[in-house]
Length: 210
Image (cartoon, rainbow, N blue to C red):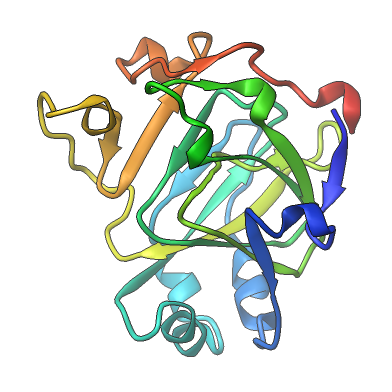
């Protein structure tokens, strides 16, 4: 798979590089969070909120709205699922990491073909915004076997417990958690747990490309 840089023009429809914030304190706190071979996501980590300049940066990113700083850490090379929120998500890594993304507009009749997925590499220490219409999921390792620690900044309570039964339409049925709509590949563990299978094609694995 061709892996482009988040500085490439091709990234513009999906997000942007965020500049100007003093992120050193957040990176220092993020570096202290655990990283294992399994991918672990935590929506809110107080140590990240208490980091130098964290509250000022969070308020600026979300225009004064309540927000949460959490992390997604681990080792990963596979797509497995895609998700979206009703707001942008901001990512910042202590190591280089790769995002596998697609566009919400490419969902046709409730299904997205994984041939629409593209890959972008974000350098360590560079904050990236993924727009609300950008489908994304867990980051991928930039080097085979290398772990990543990535800040996940979202509106407060996103990805927390909330899963109403039923749903008026296909999109409603994709609601997997609060402010989290999930499209699962049939090979994913999320599909085995009952997530809507809405990805067709290859379950992308970039192991051979990094």
